[in-house]
Image 1 (tube, rainbow, N blue to C red):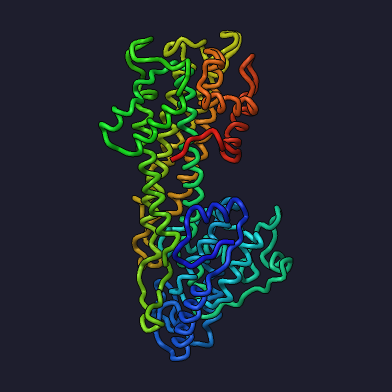
Image 2: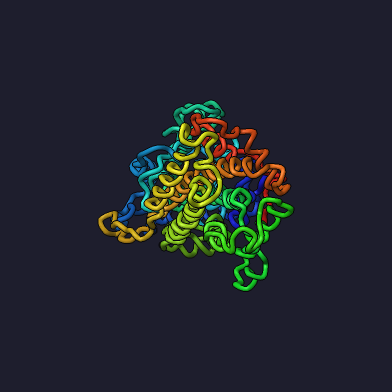
Length: 501
């Protein structure tokens, strides 16, 4: 059981909740803060104070006074009217992350919701009721209004949810778990949708997958070094300490550990004096990606525990301020940066694939064929990798550089952070497929060189891969092999094989 406080959620906690089904509860202190904040909202309504989103309309209609008799209708209409998402739903794990992050944000006690709203979110999370949330429709400022409205619909018994492998109405799924739909009161609809939890949830899932992929890319590239009889001197620690980037030093150290005791790698001048950049510069390129991952992790861990509602309630309700914490710019920039950094892992991987399949660039058989000419071998595998890296280049165009005014120009600068997070996630999926192709080709290359000469750690990766993809003994439908290897990289265990920081 993970106890949420609004301030202490970590990526490790999120991993346990998302992938291991860990349940959550709210801390007693955080619930007391929530109650105090709620009393201030009720006071605002009873005294007919003019406060945005509580006794006024929204956006450009913030100057429209709302009578206390229409407060509940205001919040219900907000959720229904803002649920304008389109396109394919977010992955179910992302919907689960949205629930978790929204609970954590509301527990900070700055939003003025009732404990009942928070408990409904917790019940949905613990009972694995995951709202179906369309991916498209958020501008990433005023928060993720459209996606979070679809999430809120389920809490009030509307919309749709994933539940035990099925897709059903919000009303039906609440009935199955004996939960009553909540009736939103003053401020609560706004508090549920004004925030960055869609882009941050997508960003968290993307980061967790990207981190694992970055480690896998190092081991796979070490296998390629063996398949191409690469020069180990380029990973000497003196080179990397001389430049000074800790992440670059770390990558070089892990590569040295992967190729330790290998009979396939070579020394400077043994076969050639220098390797191509895609081999020689693995620490420099992969290390720069790690620098980016560290930056993204820092921003996500702040945003996961941030108050992104508007308005926010401070000093026991004495101070209620409209601001702009819902603006997703910090996460928008981080997600664009993440996409670019992971795309580079694919770019350099595709170049290593080309060196293994191109007979003009190595002494391996053309396209790693068993019978070149009659068979094409890995020829089109490189095509697929090239297609994926090209697609990544279009997806890596920064979303955050765009802005379109909305709400009659009241909301005149937006982040597009949710688009950035979605694109980063797609880049990660594409990059995993490219690295699966490199893994497949590297296994074939070391088959030719001599598996018995591999380093102990790379041999473990070879043995793992061969459980899912056989050697090339003749042409076959290689798509199956790549999909299987890619799925193993995403879902399977690499414990005891990967070296991590």
